[in-house]
Image 1 (cartoon, helix red, strand yellow):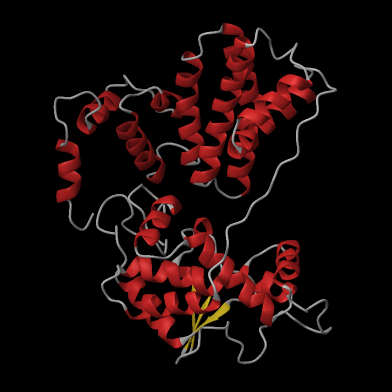
Image 2: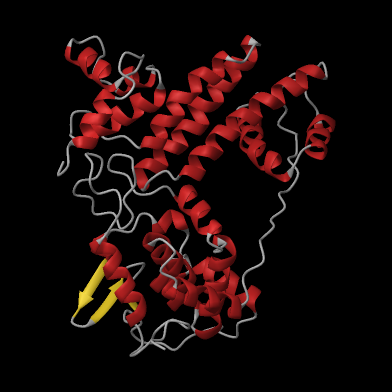
Length: 380
């Protein structure tokens, strides 16, 4: 660490209390705490243990494991212990072990687990537990419940609750834990209204000129408003994704990299020079464009979303406006490649927006058209 004072303060924090950093390190040195992830998942307070676990992973002392996978594994035993009915606890353990955890592990191996994915995994487990308790109150069980029970539960609960329970019901039906004839009601999909084009451009102008807004929020907001990126992807950008080609600056979101207009490029390069959270042992040589406070991790997308909302940038509406404007001006396959979207997603959004692009000219589309810049990114 360039400035070790914060590290020394961390070691001295909560001295004499359970879970103090110095105490945990001393117990590790004495062999009282095994150097395994399972051992750390049992330690309390869990925040101090999780922070030390991540530091040890960053140093190569513990094998690297996705922090959100660790979080779920740390949370699950406590949730199971709170379930009074042993049969219910057994069912939920099976569901978590053979459905929820394998999907989390597969996602971690494929890319990374976002906070929303981790939260949804917990909610799936909690709603499954609540459903079993609800059945018990109706003098029923998972094995004996009928279609009338399923329909009644769906009628009484919110769309979010229905979405969370759906995986458990599918798992139970496929595993013959309940009747295979049960039908799960279809899911309703609702989308938030996007910003108007005038609102999007006004928000862009404010982020480019308002120096009262923290630099990292200005940069993150501009990336959303220009390139329609979800914050879960924005926070995974690294400084290596910002490419200098002579006087031009490009941002790698897909292939080819997207050109960055001059005012945005200046803001982006200034942010890279003065990134936050770089002065502790957490991220001393971080490549993240938005380093977080956790070891080796970028800024959390949920935290960043809350901060942007406070300065008047509604992320979902901003992102919707950006992608729809791109699709009004360019073919869906070109937008998909450049911005890292799936072509089926851009084709569906194009149809919803009323775009007229149904095909695009044959030829080599591996490069952006000469001089192409996304709308609203001009120098003026």
